[in-house]
Length: 337
Image (cartoon, rainbow, N blue to C red; front, side):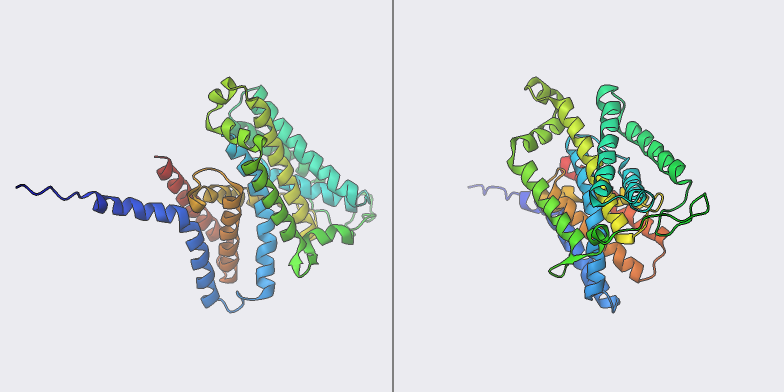
């Protein structure tokens, strides 16, 4: 009697199963590996001051990356977030130092500017049907031009000299600086703000009808439209939310450094994009998600902090950022295939 042939399927599945495991848990393993490596090689890595600095920097990146995540959910992309961070930083600093405004106006003006940037992006993309990359690239350059024209290329800081020979009448007030520098119960306030935003955004996208409609809009725009979903409205919402969170990140940045620096938000574009795309692979989600974005920000923050402590030049850090982004995109592409 002939014996049945032994199937070779299990051995063939070994490689894919390893890749699937790395796809689902690779980000968490990478975070753990980076922490262990720098903890061993850098004496000051495992200190409260260092972890506090990491968390403060992560909070800004995460806020920007959450906005990018919303644009990715609707199958879009926002290149203007870095410029929006810079614009919000300059706006909040100008409100305090040049116009002596109180905390309400100082927070309101940058947030409204972020919303305005989002509306401009949605007008170009949704109404005029320009490609999202080109539209947000144009907006990025326009915003850079606006802030450089307004500041004439100079930073805004306490007691800065004015063209008329005097000094700036206002200062960074303690209530504003508390956002980026203060602590509650030993935890940086900016970190608590970040956690609140992450939890709120996750609950909104996961457990509410509008949140699910964002995902349906991005998964199949035409099918969503035929189902009665106002896809253009949700795409507009996504870009407005992206601009809002970028502006919020700019406020936190200005309150952390205590100055309004021109083009200070440029580096947050790449960091935010990398964090959002790394988030695709966290727990095998395979799609933009807020929790994954948070883990992506943690990985970027810990890695860049360790590299800085190891005296790695900033331009070499950009090479590593690019390599991480390529890896995240490759894993995402493989999972889709």
